[in-house]
Amino acid sequence: MMVVSPVLLSLAAAVIGGAVLGLMFQRLRGSMLLGTALGAVAGAAGSLLFMLPLDYCTFEAERETIDRIFGYGLIGVGMAVVIAPIAWISARVLRGHSLISATSQPTQGTFKHGWMAFPLLAPTLIVLLGFLYYPSLETLRLSTRLARMGARREVFICVDNFTRLVNDASYWDIIGRTMYISILIVVISMALSLLIATMAYLPVKWASFYRVMLVWPYAISPAVAGIIFLLMFNPSGGIINHFLGDWFGIKPGWLNDPSVAPWTVILASVWKSMGFNILFYIAGLQNVPKDLLEAGSIDGAGVLRRFWHIVWPLLSPTTFFLIITNMTYAFFETFATIDYLTPGGGPLQSTTTMMYRVIQLGVDNNDLGKAAAQSIVLFLMVIGMTLVTFRTNGTKVTYGV
Image 1 (cartoon, rainbow, N blue to C red):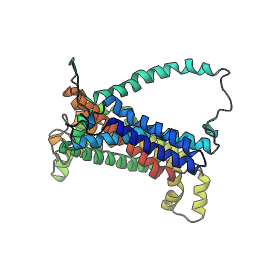
Image 2: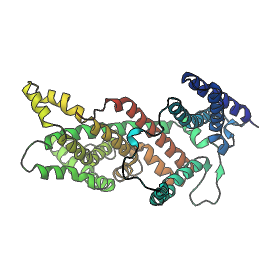
Image 3: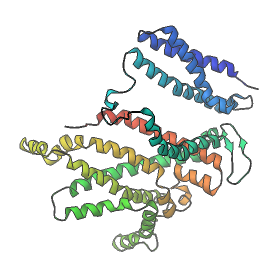
Image 4: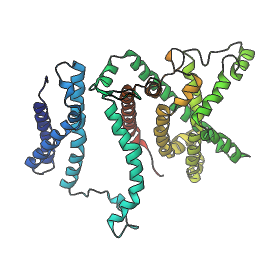
């Protein structure tokens, strides 16, 4: 038995969708009736996008309030997914604009027959279908199941794998820990990389050799980086504590102290990613016009002022690109470093991040349903942060002089 009728939900979605597109068509001097009809169909279809596979289970009588809130959220997301592209296409058509950007229209090298593109694209499409789209859909399916690796049966449990996370205090701790570890990795790595790249770009003897040595950490795997730092930061036999003990009389518990272990992971991850950042910053510095720096010097601008007003704005495309790639690395690719340095997620789970938790659940505990749900949460969180970065920093990027 349902608390809210599925028909009523679809009607409400149709009314909202019709109102949104109807008002948009009226504002753009189009047919309001056509916009309302189009919006009603899109809204109803959007409400079914997630609810149909779930069979409206979130609105069953035995479900809790959090399940119904989650259901309304899914309906809203489904409506946005369907209505947004229709609204974009309709707006361009009503304004008389082409659906294809003028800058993206090819001017040369086009096929005489359009069908020739499909066999050429087929290998890529097959790989994408087999290794990206199908696993993504399978992850969505598993997130609504009680599924164990190797078990023959799966049980449909609606959205329990998601809603139980809301009341799981340990999961909120993991989210907070993931955020501060990832942000520190991105900020420290990029700041040190810019400083080192600026120094390595100076006209010094053996500059090419220094640049190669600075970039090589990027070529080694996170697992090897973890082993190197494990040997260096070993509390009893590591070289770091050997020198700290001799010089300052202290021996921090780099790997077994809950307050210090996250910093060991951060240092190893920063060292691993710096080579990549330095490579791009050196390439960016090579594109800064020297005549601009000379003009600034003639006008009396000091080194710091020339850097801040000339070099830094021209490096903004490189910096923006590195923010996105470093954020992806910090959230998704630090598992091996954590696992080698602090197996099991560190003392008192102090180095357990969201990605590490997903692998623990899926591989170690064989709980594929929970692992799939938490991987979707992590994916959506990174997508959200990427969109925020594009909205807040994308407009400040300077392309060209």
